[in-house]
Length: 492
Image 1: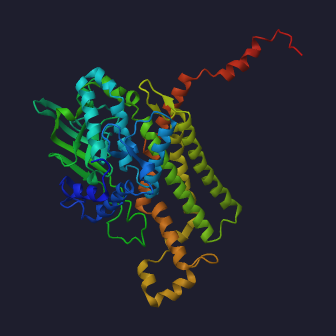
Image 2: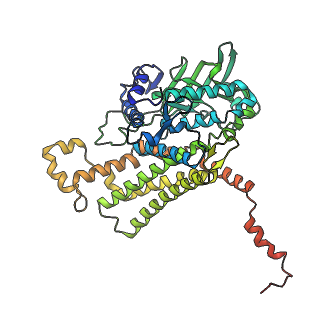
Image 3: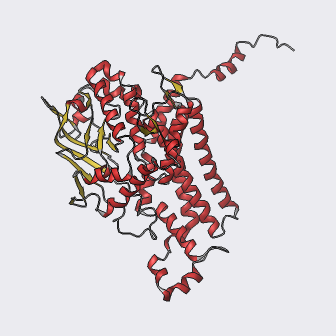
């Protein structure tokens, strides 16, 4: 099929009936459920962008294997130009959602592409695993599917490994082998957007210990597989708020969920890793599934930070406070944060790393630097919006107020901004800012950015240890050579 349209995506969605639970009730019609309806339409718009003449040549290409047009997210980059083409795809998708949806289809398509293109690693443990991931990649690529993933164990007793938990199947694990496949039981999170996706892919972060063999799993299934239950978190909006009053929350709610596997059968041809702690611990570094998608998340994070910075700037301008030195200082800080991330992305692409397979990856150090900085830069941008907006963020009237002729004169008089900024324009801007910095929707975005790659302290510690291991500190060594030369007479 190649690239699909938004209509194709919605038709596929309507044909499925996954077991989705929201606020204590089973959702029987995913498309018509108000909480999911607008996000579904936003996803459909992304698929339609692939057919838009304005973007098609930038974000898709003709697959050499099939002759069909496919997303650049499925591109195995071989050079700098390929990285640029892939980045442009990430930019177009991120800008369409203002960077507010972190798990758009391009993200996991990159993960899967990287896993498949480096599947020789899996071949060494079990040739069937490598064969399966390559076949699954082609299935997703050729049908342009939308994946979710769940790679984190529930937050139970974090002081114990999976096999040490009170219940053997608190964490997702293998129950038994059958002729038809592997039976699995337990839970995984954080399956973002899972109710409105096509399939789910399961794998895990490194950290398995001896005894954790049954939990060392990687596989993929359709989202409506029998026995797979989707437990949604509380919605950040009910799907009934107007776009006028909630211009972001009404459109970009990115539902997260816990996946519960109640003795789910995984066919053998969908198993990519099983019962091997060593392979599970090496999956990330050997297949590039951390480094390659960090390119997408870095671009998406840049757009999100840029959006928050522009909101802060427009907010300050609308009420004339950007003439004050302290406000200029704060806004200048945000702009420099945006430019820092932009520069790091370009360096990561330019200084790309060539792998033995001929594939290139954006450079590790600048990508990890982005991952270390965004959890601080984005919360700072939100803080600046809150400071600039102050009490005004809490005082916006509603669409219904503006529609009432009896109130309109007061609103037009008392809600105006600086010169040439009408009351309605100012209120629109403040509502946008409040959605981003104050509403539950905005707070979820904030928490997401703090932890989207895991514990930022642990990640920074890993980065330091890698830096220490791979650097000889040659500048210090050169400076210390003076002690070896102290009896020498310096030449003139």
